[in-house]
Structures are given as C-alpha cells and as structure tokens.
Length: 358
Image 1: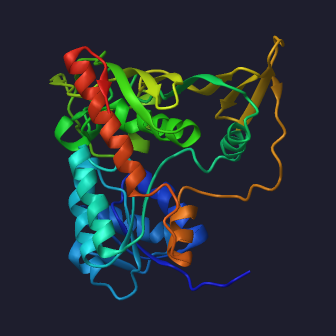
Image 2 (image 1 turned 90 degrees about the vertical axis):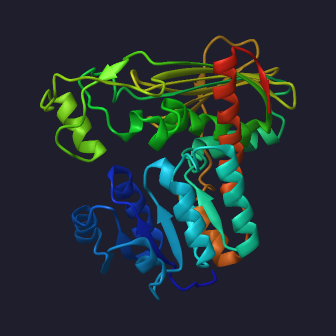
C-alpha cells in the first residue's frame, strides 16, 4: 500500500457539528489550526482535539504554512464566501451541507474549484454507510429488475419543543431553507447517487411551530438539545417568527422514469430508504445500519448480509483520497451544487404550487 504524507487540515467553525468533523479529521488526517467567530469556542475545540494553533481570523488560517485543506462547519450563509476565499488561496475545501444558500452560489463555488484546480468535498451524510454502498452495487447489477419507486424519510425531533429557542437554523438569511437544507438534502444526494439524476420535483414545505422564544443563553446545538430534553432551557416570554419550514414533502421524477418521494421533519424521528423493483424491494434502516430485502412474491423482508469487502469510511474519506490520488470522485462541490439546484426548485414549487423541471 502506498504511503502518503498526512494531510493538514485547518478547521473554520467551532459549533456543534465541528466536533463530528474533527473526530473524522483526527482519524484520517491531522488538524493543524482552527478559527471561529468566538475564539473561546475555538480554544475549547483545540483543547479537546489537540489542535496546536488557534487563529483569530480566516486570513490568518489560510496563510498558515501547515494548512493543506480547509474544513468549513459554519452556518450555511458563510459557506460560499469562506470557500471562495480558501480556494483562491489554493486550499482544498471540504464543506458541511448544504453547500450554499442558492444554486447560483453553488455554481460559483464549482467554477472556482475548476479554475484553481483544488479538490473539493461536501458532507453528503449517507454515502459512506456500508449497507447503502452494497445497495448501490445491487442496483447496478440489475438485481431489482425494473425499478418502480424510491421512498426516503430522514427526520429528527430536535425542534419539537415549542420552547426550543430561535437559533440561526430557523432564520432564512443564515440557514436558507429549514429542514430541507438540514436533513432533506441527505436524501436528495442519496437518491441521485443510487438512481441517477432527478429532472422534476414537486414540493410542499410547512412551518408548524410559527413562533419561538429568542435565544437567551448561548450554547452549541448539542447542549441546547440536551437542555430541551431535560426541561432546563431558559426562555423568554417574547416570541419571534420562525422563517423556514419544519417539515417538507417532495415528489420526484428521475430521468430514468422512476418516481420518488422524500419527507423530512425536525419534529419527529424517522429514518428509512425504500426502493421497490420488479424482482425485489430493499429497505435500509439507519440504526443499526441494516439492509432488508423482499423478493417478488414474498410477504416478509429478510436481512441482507453485507460482504466484508467494504472498507470503513467516514464522510471525509473520499475527499482525502481525492487529494492523495489527484482524483475528483464524488461527492464533490458538483454534487453539492446539484442538490442545491434541486432544493431551489423545491422552494419554487412550494411557492408556485406546481411541478418544476430541473
């Protein structure tokens, strides 16, 4: 096996999701620097993951000699300007989803990556699961026969408490869409990865809890969830309007003629992908990572044995391999752009109450 020098990562952002990214980077690369709008949070992350340098601003991190690639874990409205700046500085860039606030921003990011020649990656969420990688191979082998439909559900209940405060996730100018860009984007990417391009969408998006109390005490997302579940949140009697959707339902039409549905919510828990075909149907469950099959004519599903040929991967594995091997295997910014363009179409569909071609 060819040996490579460790890839040196500079992290931008120190919120809740930064910890998950840092754990992956630490296992497969080396984190050399971190910066955040709140230096105290960056210092806390640095202590936890033994990051040697805490930078006061993004230019300082990008000018750091020991940074080969940048990992962005900021709120979505900062993804585009930070990524553009990093690519112009010659840094490879891995970005948390959604890639941008709009398809146009995402296109600009793809064009900059092509212009500068840097490698890019986006947090796709599901491509590294062994069961889904095996399902993709089953589909490519034609085991299902003609595929009739795709059904995906990806939901968490972190926002079901009406007292959960109005963080940036509920604000259109910082998050863009709500649960669509937070959770539904995973299913959009996975649907494309499994079955090919989507060429038409019809969407319905709904705000179920119209107002929430403002954020009184700042805590990262994970701590807010813990306090909410324990009934320990400090709240204000004043309420502020929620600006983006709590639930979304999508109808899809793929280029190959397959029909599909996607549903996501931040108010309940549901994790499932189901693909129905002429000769068999398959269902994937998140916890545990499990694949089930029901052959045509049968009534019950049975567990599918996943071959041990699938290596362990994380959300950053392919990005790092692309840097080491000078490749552009997905998911790259191009895949993030395709998902963002589809989400723009969903927003348009919901607004105009119609199907939208992509």
